[in-house]
Length: 86
Image (cartoon, rainbow, N blue to C red; front, side, top):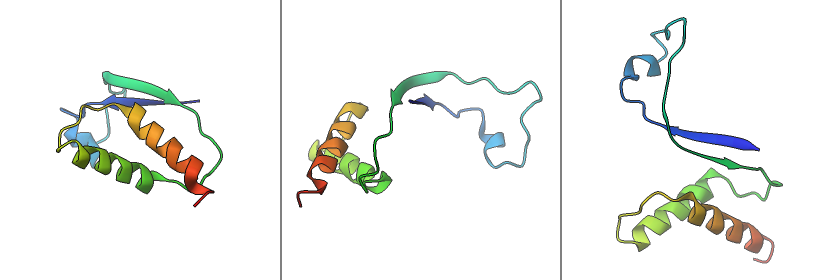
C-alpha cells in the first residue's frame, strides 16, 4: 500500500532548488489531503494515460473540476480492463 499526501509548498521556495539545505531539525508541512493506493500488475498504462484522462475530464466539464481522484482511478481502471480487448 502507498500513501500520497498533497501539501502546499508556500514558504518553502528557498528549499526547492536544492541550493539551501533545510534546517537540521527538519521542516514541517501540513497534509492538505491524503489517500492510499495499491499497485496492480503492469498493464502498460502509465502517467501519460492518467494525465490524458484528467485533461479529458476537465475539458468535458467546461474547464472547472473540483479535485476528486475517484473518476481518475475509475477511468484508468476501465482503460486497463479494455486494453486487452482492443
